Amino acid sequence: MTKEKYNELSKEIVDACFHVHRELGPGLLGSVYEYALLTEFNLRSIKEINQLETILYYKGFNTGKY
Figure 1: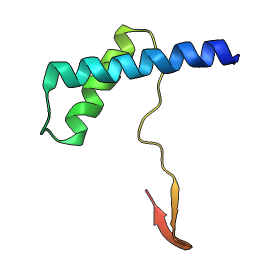
Figure 2 (figure 1 turned 135 degrees about the vertical axis):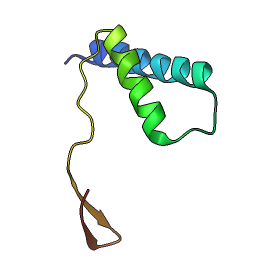
Figure 3 (figure 1 turned 90 degrees about the vertical axis):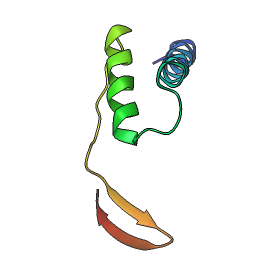
Figure 4 (figure 1 turned 120 degrees about the horizontal axis):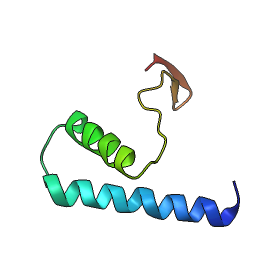
């Protein structure tokens, strides 16, 4: 991906986040915002992958898979 395409995609993602926040407002569960953002990405034809399992290391500790 070129730097220009990366910057365009970044702007589109930030704009999608802004629209979700403006539509729903503050104070809801993260899962609500996640669903709304995935919907917003779909409307904008942004391919996404969510809830991937990863191993988290925090301050030198392996805290397990999430």
